[in-house]
Image (cartoon, rainbow, N blue to C red; front, side, top):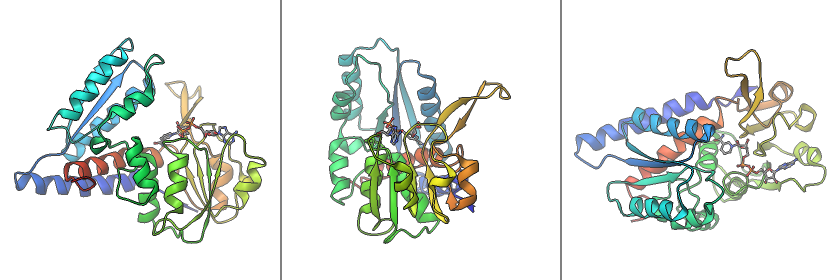
Amino acid sequence: MLLLDGKLLSENIKAEIAAEVDVIRQKGGKIPHLAAVLVGENPASQVYVNSKIKSCEQVGFKSSMVRRDADLSEAELLEIVHNLNNDPDVDGFIVQLPLPKHINEEKIILAIDHRKDVDGFHPVNFGRMAQGMSAFLPATPFGIMEMLRRYNIETAGKHCVVLGRSNIVGTPMSLLLSRKGYPGDCTVTLTHSRTKDLPAEVRRADIVVAAIGIPQFVKGDWVKEGAVVVDVGINRIPDDTKKSGFRLVGDVDFDEVAPKCSHITPVPGGVGLMTVTALLMNTLKACRKEIYQ
Ligand code: NAD
């Protein structure tokens, strides 16, 4: 069994991006600028945004954060989005989800200029991705595709079972893996909470992508010998031995599943770090106008 090491891979990719930023700087070009909007006090969101900002610093990007209290109105948030859309120095920006209940997330995502949508959540980017056109890919699936590519995981003709059909992970992942080319050309089964006999579906998989948000849900006897397992889940479970009182586990029961796999991502240290790195890759593309002229 080989670990798909998101930490090592993201460090390598960040070093490549940092080298590109150096070249841009030497030539007097525009330094990529990522902005992040954080509303409210959700602790997980704060951790994610801080890590995105820190990663920007590591590669030499400019970053900025717009922080507001949870009682911000929808109109005020739309105004912030509008200002970022029109700020020529900002190449790309994200609005960290989830938003407070009184704000319509769909309305906010639709308001983001798709040319700055480095999270790849806008329907223009989603539609372009589905049609195999150049697009900002959602960061988590983009990070996973990059991981499969850099580890030379064979995908053509493989049967991939994706667990979870969210707009940000499961559904785009299923589309990307079924697209023509590498990594792709898989035969994909997209499963969800209404799927009958999920273990039987997973047992047929050469590649498993688990994105459901239930700790240690995928068990050892669900997984075929030699399968590649990508665990997207990030779940907190109580752990008295930790100062924080919790530890992070994935959607896969790592101890049971790992011995059967050819490759598996750890949690933490797997997909999560690649997600942040993919966001940097998208920001660099936005600055270079690689997706949209
Ligand atoms: P979500 O909560 O939006 O959707 C969960 C999906 O799982 C749904 O489609 C649902 O149908 C399916 N599901 C729920 N129960 C199921 C069951 N018993 N059997 C089969 N399917 C079931 O999920 P999400 O936003 O895609 O997040 C999934 C997990 O991935 C969470 O743990 C989240 O924290 C994590 N996540 C990690 C990253 C990362 O960077 N690593 C990024 C996004 C999400």
